[in-house]
Length: 148
Ligand SMILES: [Fe+2]
Ligand SMILES: [Fe+2]
Image (tube, rainbow, N blue to C red):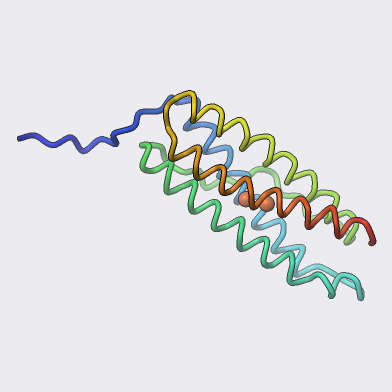
């Protein structure tokens, strides 16, 4: 008996491209937040330094998770980050990071919709979990922005 080695689920090129855009974005923010962790200055910066590091690590885990899914769906994960902008002050870091999280939230909502449309419940589920993290990050950065 011949056993198929293909994944059971078939998705569109468009969805695969969206997953790759998500990976590019996750690599971007994992570097962006880690370099902010390194470049913070001043009393306020030191107080929140670890938050950047923890968030950077969370983003790298997202990149891994999405890449794993894309590989299963017969796509090749990109190695290129979306444009990284570190910023020059704590306030600027937080403004850039809030913007990045808003972009992620919008992008991942679209991916969830698209995956559902294509009957790919697993990708939708993975992105719902990631979306929850991105909403937490958005909350964290906007809370930090209230007093810088
Ligand atoms: Fe993320
Ligand atoms: Fe995030």
